[in-house]
Image 1: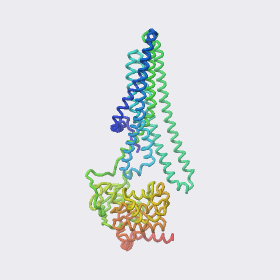
Image 2 (image 1 turned 60 degrees about the vertical axis):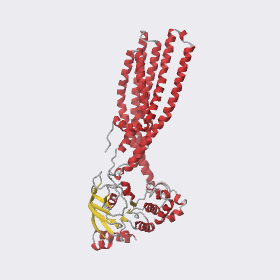
Image 3 (image 1 turned 180 degrees about the vertical axis):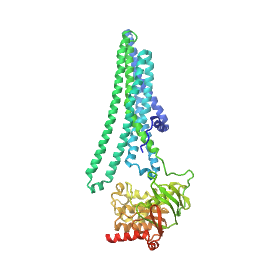
Image 4 (image 1 turned 30 degrees about the vertical axis):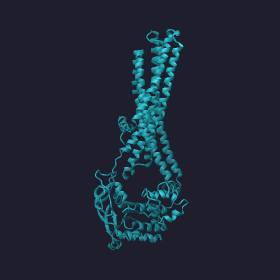
Amino acid sequence: MEPRRMKTTELMRRFLPYFSKYKKTLILDLCCASLTTICEMVLPLILRHITNIGMKDVALVTGKMIGSMGLLYLALRIIDAVANYYMSSVGHIMGAKIETDMRADAFNHLQKLSDSYYNNVKVGQIMSRITNDLFDVTEFAHHCPEEFFIAFIKAVVSFIILIQINIPLTLILFFIIPVMAVSCSYFNLRMRAAFKKQRNHIGELNAQIEDSLLGGRVVRAFGNEQMEIKKFGEGNHKFLEIKTETYHYMAGFNMTTRLFDGLMYLVVIVLGSYLMMKGSIEPGDLFAYTLYVTTLLTTIRRIIEFTEQFQRGMTGIERFVEIMDSKIDIFDEPDAKNLENVKGEISFENVSFEYPDDHNAVLRDVSLKIRQGEKIALVGPSGGGKTTLCNLIPRFYDTTSGRILIDGQDNKKVTLQSLRANIGIVQQDVYLFSGTVYENIVYGRPGASREEVIEAAKMAGAHEFISELKNGYDTYVGERGVKLSGGQKQRISIARVFLKNPAILILDEATSALDNESEVVVSKSLERLAVGRTTLTIAHRLTTIRNADRILVLSDGKINEQGNHEQLMAMKGQYYQLYMSVNALDKEVG
């Protein structure tokens, strides 16, 4: 579903609180803006004064008067230079700080979103929103109040001065300005929509580039480089079409404003000359009038030029707000308590679960009690609910109905941090961060000593191969651990869990992607890791879980059978059929 279109007033209401930390800086910036504006608007008055005196009697234009006018203007230019320096430096820094605050808020919010959100949003889109989109906010945050404040001062001061020079001419000119604003609004609204389309599409391009580069080995393995180039070319051309549309609206916008510029100058030239001919306006006044109109039109042009930046900024704010408005599904209850002294007893009470986006029922009224330190194995066909059942324990998702208890405490009534601190997970798809071996292991318990990290690696059977790496524990593993083998990555992930030392352990097909030799080594590491912990193992190789205390057979969201290996084989039910078919397949492959 497309997010609703937000009004500018609503977006500004959401954005303005970010100025509160920097209100002193903003006030001083606007004071400097008013000084630069006053300095600029005094020049026509000086020229008007000298011209009118000179037209009456050039002898009245004395050296003293010229000197005093020159010193006045020099002082104003010095004030203008200092004020402009503040605006250009501190003002821009304020904008950068606001951008930084917004990016931090967006990142913090993203950390609180559940897997349901990431299942439906591309990482490239998220990256675009918290980087490219917020770049424009820096300029917007600085220039938006500044430009509109300057425009307001110039419009008011110009009107006061011009109305004193000639009322009819001024009223005609100021009548043209709102007509111009209304005429430009057509293009203005379409520019905003076009900029948002640009942002959305650049997010899609980012996602496509990320997908292609991270899957580069698969692309090359299938020889599909040309297909990827074609896909990217289509997306890139689509982006060009959107930008072309945007530039057409910008051109229409600029054309309209230039036509009205010309109309205002035409009024001044024709009507002003006529009034001077009739003696209703003095030559010096008409000269000053023209300078003020030029100042006014320059201001209008700046606002027009700023409109593009304004719309980019509003688009960035809108896409930021869309992230901040994403619902946090998994959160701490107000009365949530810390889960302490965990022993590892887990109870499922009439648990059902369906994914919120497609309402596909995955678990149906599951009740299960797992004793402290018990070794549970989960088997069954793909889509039977094995991984989902395990994901509900650390609250990666919340149950649709029923509840899960850890040592008798509802997992929704304890803090997420304390709940997840007591659960260790080893997955099939190991994720290593871009960094060193040491940094990836210590991630299990930030602040652990180097000796503790090495001890965890020894327990995981990883110390030997780590020591043989070029830089040992300080070896860079590459993005997602690309420089290591599957078995090496898995042992590092196990070391990470050893360091964490949780009471509950979830093994999600941890050895399924490994070769036979690596599987043996990793399996021994997992056996050591499981000692003294409540362990849930999801396995597709049934021979690896024969020694489990209890085996659960899940299919269609229900536990159809449970017992140890001998009991289930004697029942000759679903587990028996699975075991015999896997054995037959292994013999055939062998």
